[in-house]
Length: 117
Image (cartoon, rainbow, N blue to C red; front, side, top):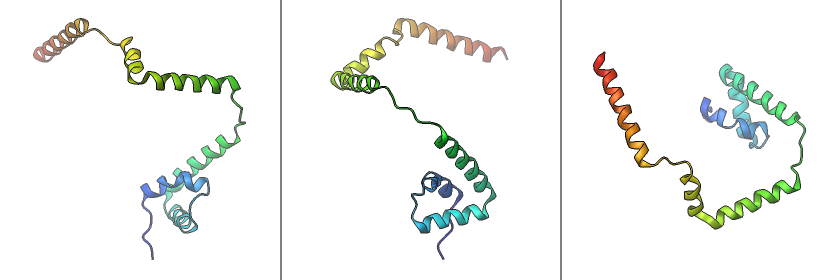
């Protein structure tokens, strides 16, 4: 007799179980665990009802221009590589001249708080 699935293993199989992609023997093991474990059964009910709601949402097709914009941006980012990434981050970085006094002030404030109590 094969060993029963653990809670973690059963929950990890929820996606494939909902999509009916599991082999028959694995699906039987999941179903068997769900029949005997109230905790996993509650988790499965919540998961499957969420999947059902998502499947009922009408699908909309993205505008054709969106796909071409996304592909163009991906191509630009591939061309610029790490240099483009560094340039993008440069806009959000603090200069060291500002960062050091702020960290020093925070350290002094923390010291004063600790020493006063």
